[in-house]
Length: 442
Ligand code: NDP
Ligand code: HSE
Image (cartoon, rainbow, N blue to C red; front, side):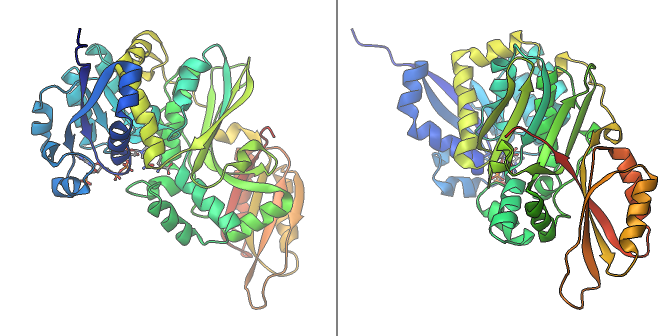
């Protein structure tokens, strides 16, 4: 007896850029394996883009399935699942709502949309009896959402420490190790397809912040809104910070951190460039790679590492969500586990001013007698205890020299108050750079 052909799963794909192109490539090249593992055949039925001519010319999918008309896209028969890899909030949010309202599960890589409209979209999906899968929204190819929602569910999680943006990690690595300037390194990250359409999202820390909100919401079973998260990017770092860091045994990483306040439900979330010891595992994460350290009460420290951006790594996460959707695993997890942000209250967020840490402080100061004394006097008056001072000579003719001070553990708000006073000194040029010093496992 002849076997009947496998059931086809029709896919509607919104976006055919870096990630969408990777999705189309994987579905084409791995078709036989996916059919063997799910027993179903995947077929991209329609692709929605803005510039149809460009997508048709790409050769990534058959030209006759490409459209720039959302109505034509949604009218396509036989679409069982919608993949959104277009990015942005408008009009993409409306496209996602339309898919959910049509009763289609949605797979998305769009952290901007989820961080800002996640609870509403999750609730809509639930009301329509479908699900949203979003592994690609955080950590590119690293299955960190799977780890947090399923693999670590036995744990009470106390902290997340992540390098969650490939572009900035690439820039920091190139500045530290290849002597590139900030501008050269950013161009490199764009050429590699890591950067957002607007790279300000990356370098300002916004992208990492959106991912942190998604991950921390899952880890702590509470909503965390991006506007509650203090965020600082890498734009103000200079070569001198890398040099002084190296001299003291530190690397600079843009860390997205979410820590549960000991003994409370309160969480402290922030994104900022930090010094981490060169011996720490997270300091080894170079280039476009990402890593997420998770501290669980039973596991202790676990760390998830891999390509955090780029076409195929991100497509891996999208297509894995697709396969989990086809097998029913994704829908069951979404319907039955209580981790999704629409089911949880907003987390009480601790003011970062009240948290404590050691810090690195870099000032640009006039090279003349008494300046260090003025600065250390102000720190002393605020009760900030200094652990080290470094000042190297600079080329003749330079009006200012970098003055580097490291502190013992101090309340962040107290240090910021002292720095605000220091900033007003006539001998100090520019706003000082403050980096948190974070101790993470080796
Ligand atoms: P690209 O800019 O490379 O591609 C975007 C695609 O979406 C293009 O085909 C574009 O069409 C299409 N598109 C954009 N807006 C619309 C719209 N309103 N309607 C229809 N089509 C639209 O982006 P990426 O592939 O890099 O990123 C896509 C998503 O994946 C974003 O949410 C991003 O944050 C996320 N992501 C990206 C990663 C990466 O490494 N690049 C990693 C992880 C997540 P056209 O070309 O015609 O304008
Ligand atoms: N622009 C993002 C990054 C893409 O650089 O990490 C991955 O989300």
